[in-house]
Image (cartoon, rainbow, N blue to C red; front, side, top):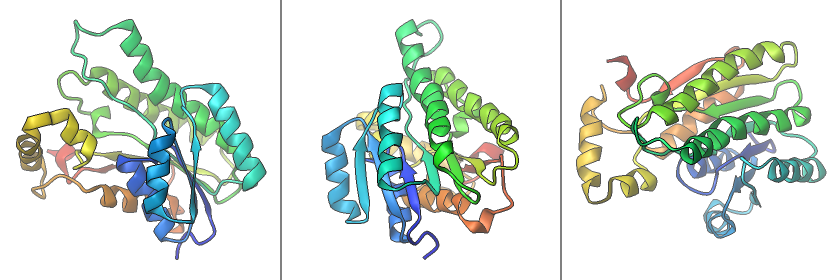
Amino acid sequence: MEFKNKVVLVSGGSSGLGFAIAKEFATQGACVVITGRRQERLDQALTILGNNVEAFAADVSRPTDLASLFSHMKATHGHIDVLVANAGMGEIAPLGTITEAGFDRVFETNVKGVTFTVQGALPLMNKGASIVIIGSTASISPGPGLGLYGATKAALRALVRSWILDIKGSGVRINMLSPGPVDTQSLRNMAGDHAEQLIQSLSEKSTIGRVGEAREIGKAVAFLASDASSYINGIELFADGGASQV
């Protein structure tokens, strides 16, 4: 197993893509720590993920929560082999309806939260460690109302390109995995009664005729974190069925 006894931290790991990512690493033998804002969701995730996974309640947009998280990681595990900065949020806000509160909310979680998650983890990461930041195809092609969300993911891409220069020589790699549409409960909840219609529409835009599955994103993240990608650094890998290429 590729990640046997490796310490893997997945932010936003209680549901959706984060859950699938955590499950993939756990399946490959890792000691996984997931974070999330809601303890009840974390507890539910643990019942499925198994004994080699633990949870820590934390809101990545709050520096005090992150300080507590990394104190726990240092005291309990001593180091971090893989960080997956997955925690994020999105809001549909077309131009003309954007509010200051909504703007701050999205940027505080998606940009500030990721920045200080990475910065907090680095002192616990040694040569050969890997960071994977979860982006989105919205970074290059945001749909209507997704300008703010897409801007946060584009900001992450710029940060990654700078960060690999900042930590040059450390032996720690940083890459970005940007999924396209994935059939998750959150996507279906957003679409409501039109969920199947949305899935069909998104499938038609894919060059392979379907949307992604969460488990596929988990495997792509594991690849970027593994020794199989040891010469890959600073990239944004699109896992979107080719939709961003057409």
